[in-house]
Image (cartoon, rainbow, N blue to C red; front, side, top):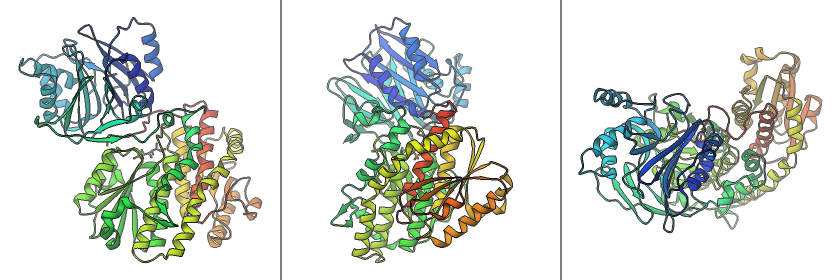
Length: 615
Ligand code: M6R
């Protein structure tokens, strides 16, 4: 939530910052702004709305040349998304500029203190207090910006990444982090700070990971990291594996369409190096071997789409490992009194690896004695770092706010973990594993086949674009797919959409069914899941008897369904537990096209941000 970038070097800071913000706009797009150090002064430009608005402002200004500056794209928390509340924020003398991601929870108290001292705050944000607090510390001539930042951070509670520049130090940028992400990009005669690597991968793949409660100072030739007390610490270097081109649209109209098309490769990349000689080898979990063997409970914690991946994996985990598995909203977990039994293996799932709800739930589970495995897509994210082990999904950067390729790769990664546990517990033989590996390896080709039907699904969505409400039903793993289809439609097309287990309809939701209401049904395979198939046909009949319109997502050889559905979208027939990998794709495309047909911004839907770093 909120994207941050800082640059000091030899290039035009304005150009580097705007390019970086373009790649981080998915983190928030309520406003954008930059501050530059030029001729020993700070110049600031900011504008409500998407980055384009700021770019238009800049095009009409005589922006001074600068090689050092900071940029921000905002997801509003405190204060409306207007020009005044846009970052950067300045102190009263316009000598310090600050940008922030997170929430400063004690800002009201700090604001009162500043006001009592005669400071006139300009915005409604929690961030602005930091600019004034830094200025107050810097009145003490013994202190520099870095020392002032340490002192101020010690007074703040909540989650924050802060990045500051000052007119007095034309080549210096100071950053600090607690519970919010910040990484350093190391260039040649230039250095970067950013919320994530996508802001600088076009310039460098060499990066540094910052720990909790650390302050970093960068100039074009140096990087120094200290803790909030001033003790120097050695940051951990890493090489960015993402390719700069992967963060571009690559000829597609939308990031979401590109990311849907990326899915076969994302799955292959997630399997790569984890299958050897027809066996699954997860070296990442080697150190947790005894915890996996002794696991008696599996607890999956996640939010949104990642939670749906967990709900689907639960069926596989229980079938393969015989270990009771529960799936919980991370946002609820620590606010009740969860019983974390002995030998609980907790699996947290997060594309960004920064979702605050998931991070807090992880910490709670860990404090309760659980061993934690993370399934993450973003390198060195906080959730990955704080877990006992991490299995990365190699989906590459996911820029569209609606998650697609991350979802499929999360299911794949979870299945690898589930199968590994089942094998360690002696439930799976070598030949069963070889068969499963064959099925996994066939997934990219199966997904390719589904992608061949994209145009048909887009046409169908256009045909149905006037609908106001859609219900999704499924059984077994199809229930998770139904929830995911409904979430996609809500977040992109802003429509009423709800997912239910098909058998639950008759317990209440069927009252919603009226003439021409669209119900999307995830139909289980008639051969592999005959009983479920029969049951869902009955559920379809109940709906049709009340005038409902059925769109079935059915396997290619299901000829029974034709008689019962108004529309049928075919997907390849896979192993029943793997079926969601194919069935969800038409729903991604459907939601994307519905949103387009209704004139919405698919990649940046209203009110949302990709990485939700507040609770
Ligand atoms: O980065 P995470 O996977 O932790 O994000 C969790 C949810 O915020 C995310 O999946 C969200 O639901 C997506 N926008 C849905 O498309």
